[in-house]
Amino acid sequence: MTITLDLDASTSDAPTRRSLSNLSLAVAKCKKILVVTGAGISCSCGIPDFRSSDGLYALVKQQYPDVVLKGRDLFDASLFRDATSTAVFYTFISQLKKSIDSASPSPTHRFIKTLDSKRKLLRSYTQNIDGLEERAGLVGTASQEVKSTGKGKSKIKTKEVRNVQLHGDIHRVRCTFCSADFPCSQEHIDTFLSGAPPECPECAARSTARVARSARALKVGTLRPAIVLYDEPHPLGDDIGTIQTADIARKPDMLIIMGTSLKVHGFKKLVKDFARTVHECAPSCSASGGSPLKKNAKSFAGKVIFVNKTAPGSEWDGIIDYHVVGETDRWCEKVIEDWKKARPSDWEVQKTLVATGESATGGSFHVAKEITNTVGAKAKGASPAYFSLWYLRS
Image (cartoon, rainbow, N blue to C red):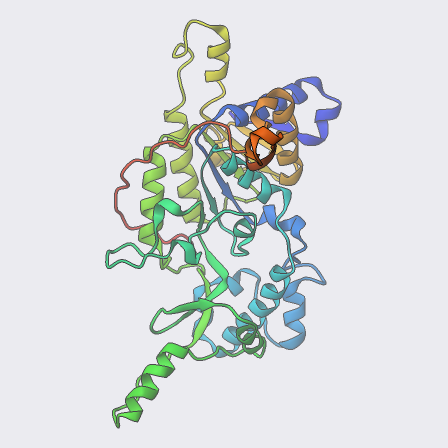
């Protein structure tokens, strides 16, 4: 059964307050936490929603008053079958990209980065395309830092990925023909705003070179946002499958789900696989034995926490242990506050002093390095098995 804890009740209800504090301590004690997130963690970042009277879709409707599209239709791969819906999509994406560019990471994004800095985070997985996790310091699957340059099957260096972008990244564009990808520039955004896709420069260069040799021109693809739409396979699906398998093999001790309605089929499957592993890896009550303190610490492992304003559906009974009702930012800030009170040593800063000057003349010292990531040690990763990921948005 899922236990519901309302953040608003924590100030007046003592049992709720104690339970929330225990969850905070659980986060502080666990060492291999998986975090999965949805659009709710970016709501406080200043990105307009899609449906309100002043939302992004309303702005697009001003440009295309006769077009009838639902919000979900703007993220369905079938939209490319029609020239008008394709034009609406590109215009919408240009408006969304502008909003995202002016946004900053939320306290929730920074909380996930804190877990990583404290060596608590096994990995972060997100449905979001805004790339705010990377701005908070988490290297994502779309980052140039993790691109593989070898001749193997892997397209990315999976061990270096800290945030898995399940639905791609709006900050990059890719060719519909040759799959070359590039950073999304202002020139791309300006072209998208008109409802048209720009040509792929690599395709165009190859075709021009052939024509210069009096050969037949090649097909030139167009550039589209490097995001994954509904009913589309992920270009990095095999690599993401490898990462997921490796994370399950490392026996995560907590799963935190934040800001998602848990409605997308492929995402639900991923969450359920993670939750099953977390529960299977939870220590039994008798596992710690001996000291009551050790037994208490062990009991914090193996929990699935869902932080969202709305409750999960009945299908999640027995899967989600705790539903924290409220904004993810508030909960994350509370966890950090409780963590600092309960375990202040986790937040101590180690300073390395280096002598300057001659000792005979009374030389001084200066701080050469500060180390804040002093909690725990990185777990050894298992050799990931290779398999093909399902269609994440099917």
